[in-house]
Structures are given as structure tokens and as C-alpha cells.
Image (cartoon, rainbow, N blue to C red; front, side, top):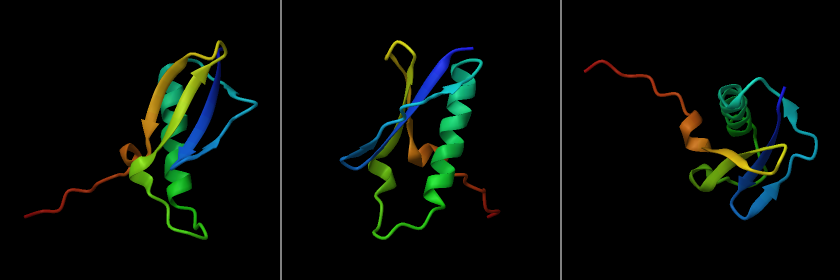
Amino acid sequence: MPLYFFNVQIGDDILSDPEGQQLRDPDQAWEVARAMAQNLMNTEFERPVNWSSSHIEVKDNEGETVLEFPFLEALQFTQQPH
């Protein structure tokens, strides 16, 4: 199975993923990135975080960018009746 690395960029800070995860394909990597973004946005931080300027960059074992997942894409909206 391919190895994917999930590097989190929040503002100017980059948290690199040195270990990666073995996943079946880019679709599963997208699902993992979405879950990571949701978990991070539900975490309390000492200072406010601008999620609109944050994303997760997913790279493969060769260092190629597979996808960039914007944090705001992980928000789940519920439609309100009018």
C-alpha cells in the first residue's frame, strides 16, 4: 500500500509528518485529511486559529503533492428549513 504524509499548515506554521500512513489510495488519504481537519478544529488552542488560511498538504512516498485539503472544506453544514 502507498505511503502518504500529512503536513499541516496553520498560518505560517508547518507541522511535518515524518512517519506517514499506509493507505489504499488518494481517496482514502482525502478521508484521513478531512478527519484530521475536523479533529484539529475541535481542539482548543491557546490562541485563536485562522482556519481559512490553513490546510493539510498530502504527499506521497516520492514527495509529490497528492492533494491539499483546506480546513474549511471539513466543515459540515446543515441546511435549515426556511
